[in-house]
Length: 453
Image (cartoon, rainbow, N blue to C red):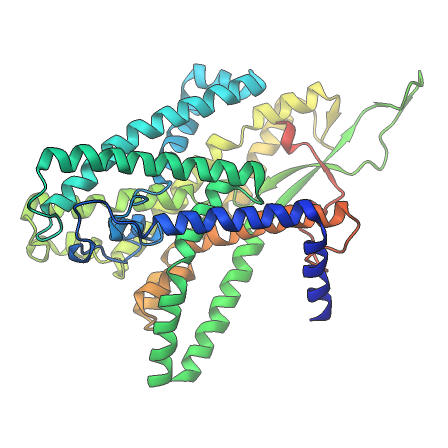
């Protein structure tokens, strides 16, 4: 405990780090404040947005920290920007123009992509804002009847768009002047905002029923977080060796014997994207059921009814399969064995025991396929685990979403990234880091070529 307190004192001693942390906390407070400022002419108490993370409205509400359900100025949060970023990223895989911007034009290309992403964010915000306001308008008692429809839509769509742009700007400011990735931190603070409420509800329920079962829940939750950290951080290191390396201005070449360079292939290279894509597909059964049977989904077919129940066996089996499939697809888009092989050739390096060129490409491709299997299975299991703990163990739905899915993966990834940056500041000032055993990426002395790909 003393070492931990000393580490916190060391963090406070570093002026730049202290200012960055305080700036980040201030921006997060501003963002949370905006989540409670209700749009003009809206009665937020009349809105009924579910908290089920497998429902599209509940998912958006969870990512915005309740702002969506409050009809706040940050109701759309940073989600339009995330959507725009995903679209631009997918275009980079399929459209040559975007491929050129991402891979060949360096800093100027990244600036163009950033600008295009911002413009697309505004367009998406206008569409989503109009849809959101239409939903509010159709909810009985949610809108002041004295407000004309045209005024309501025109004023509030400007406010919603401004809120999203402001949230995007706040995220960029955190990245520039704060600590951690700003956009990721805004999403994380939105997700974690509901944790105290649902945790308290679960704790009260445990005291009224069985406190021993609550302790089992906490142990299980802790174990899941540990496994998630292992998978998020897990890499398969492919050792590489340089044929020859120039040393200083000497005319001779010295073999790179003993150089510990490697290609890091992540076990979970696709992150949370497969889960997001799979959940988007799983929203289709509800749409089909409502189209076929109106709002009376219960009278639709038994299969459609079960696919609309996020705790049902058919729903979770299909969701698991979709996550596994999308993991392979997205990993194939992200990891390009041909690009790795060409890079090694340009650097006059090779994988020991593997011939350069096509053989290296095939080796990386087969290795990526093998390590993606455990990563995809883990993503599938972590996606359906909230349904398991809610349906089988009886954990309340609000608390169950933190046992897996996008919520847990985002929380773990963002916390690890922020810790890595703090760790780097501490080590630069020759202080001990936050983690005394193991290693974060910031503490590794190993060289990687992943950043150069």
